[in-house]
Image 1 (cartoon, rainbow, N blue to C red):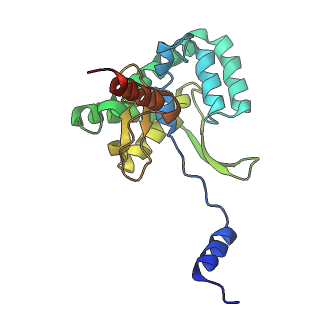
Image 2: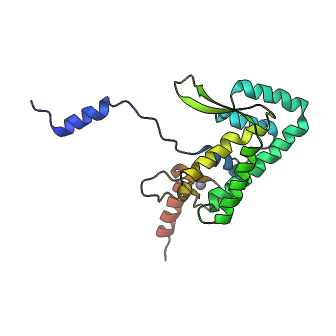
Image 3: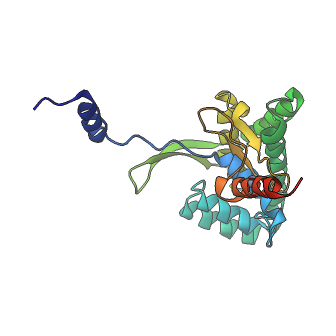
Length: 216
Ligand SMILES: [Zn+2]
């Protein structure tokens, strides 16, 4: 029996190895969204230095071994740890401005570039490629001087990647005015409006239904 071309296509797509899953978000945008939690109980996710470190560990931006070393340093140098928290929030504020207004406002973009270069420029270290247990790889930056100073590097590099890749056109804030989350629109038509269809998108849909149901 002849194999139809559609069968052949199906077989072909079945045999193809799965490609890498494209990232649905960006590290720097996730970092910006740690302050969006301010609307919720519990508040800002970066409430202290330890919270910054835990967040970076959860994102895979700091490995456990290095985090343990930094924790020991933070006990010995609490002022340096506190300054790092202040700095992390400063970087975050610049990146929030970049996410919300960077595409349209050149001045905001310029300010963010100064901030990114400030972080990139003050930290000496070595770059490395790390194999992961799941078979994937990740770039790593291992600071040689002040361990605290290197912590923001993966975040500003992620923002730098978005600038280099001209992605700002797809970065925006959620259309729900109560929601502070920013996201990257990965849809084909570039018309995504909500950070998440399951929460903000659904709320907007329900509000439209209610408006329609109400008598004029
Ligand atoms: Zn939202």
